Length: 608
Ligand code: AGP
Image 1 (spheres, rainbow, N blue to C red):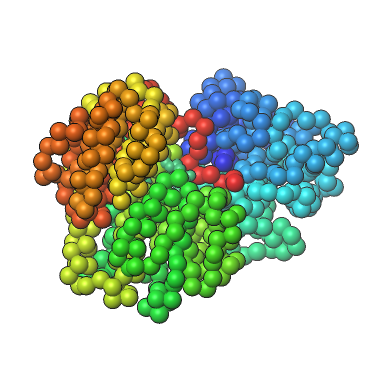
Image 2 (cartoon, rainbow, N blue to C red):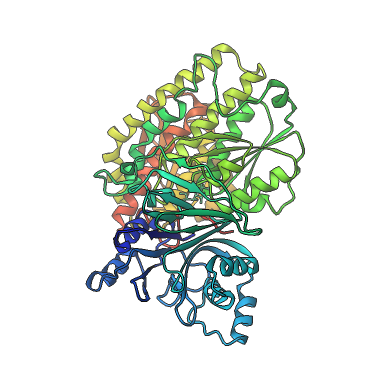
């Protein structure tokens, strides 16, 4: 999932393209490139590695031009290399393309084009596109692009620049996000809003099967298939550019961890009253809720982990069976869906291809589809029947933190809502849970303020390790999975999470002298059981860090103990995950890892 940008206007495009790519670098950072029309020819500058390498490359010989395209890559077809970097061009260089997505039938198209004498200089799927445009061009760029797109199978967001019609860009969207930024006598294209926010808060969000012809003063949008013109509404963005800056923190991840109290406040704002939850965006009647015989929560990665907590709280409070599925499995396993099925998809970016496909699968099979999403105006948000927005604001670090906390907050509210609608939760219990929810922002702030230094010290003990384990029971186990993912994805330490009671059925064999084990122990009903599992680990030499509620007397089985403020057992996940986020962060910093842009990963996974 790459990041693409484009500009046409009066300013020099180079710095605008580079700044836009900087804002999209979280989408992929294997290589980067820009192409500009300088009044005579199209210049191409591209290099393997981070955007900083490209900035270096063009610093001495800065390309000039008022129109151009840019790309930052997450490699799918062809290893990270300069020849495989975008933009790609046809043999003569007349047509230049940047692409985000995967062309599934590129091999056949490439063979056909080679037959016709086209020379290829990369291993990528993308390079077939400029060659096809070159093949079909008969004096009308839009027509040539439409003919080309008709040949493509797969997902693509495209930006096209040509020597024949150098005053315009062509943009095309099919199953990969693309927006057009509008700013009077200049226009932009981009994979995501942060790339244009510095210049405008007015955008068109392209839908699948739409293309745009963009000049400095005009944006015309068409249906790709029939070429008919489309009138679109302008979307006004309510984020300010500052929200996508580091604000003095060393990393976006640490900044976003510190933003979590605010995230909870924004998620609950206007949705809580003394005993009930109100969602403006969702109206499920008592009859509809009672008709649901099954709820699926479907997502990927961290969003999936929030679904595991949702299962506990929805089944416990609303007594509706919940199945939690990894999206890439859900859509191909023929899930049992009917009109009495509610499918909840969860996504920070709202663009994750597997989750989007699962949403479409659910709707095609008659389910009601509710989305819990962060990114306003994203594809998942627009295609779902109902949307609960997380309101976490832009999340830039690849490792998701504040969005996870926002997802949990929304699921707690949703569980109370579903239970209350069915009279399954008394005023008293509901009021107690809602009061506890309201306390969470301060409690999270307290952990960050009081425990960060201690956790930073603890991280030094673990930074040299190559393996780690996380254990817990009930919601603690779901949070253990998230803690383990955070450690893996930013510190590259091999880590696994287990239900504490499951260790003795095999994995305990991996516990030896010095192995770090993080044990979450906040679930009172199973605390003794969890502590006996900790003793089993200690007996084999594990070094155990316990995460417990404050007021819990010192537990001698723990080598280190982190206390979080007391809350309702079922709400503990919002507090216990914070020390795990901080621990992973400080271990990654101690190991000198690239915290915000971990290797091999990207922020939103828009390919299957
Ligand atoms: C989490 O830190 C990762 N970035 C990743 O697992 C992420 O949660 C997953 O790709 C889902 O992304 P989404 O929430 O944008 O759909």
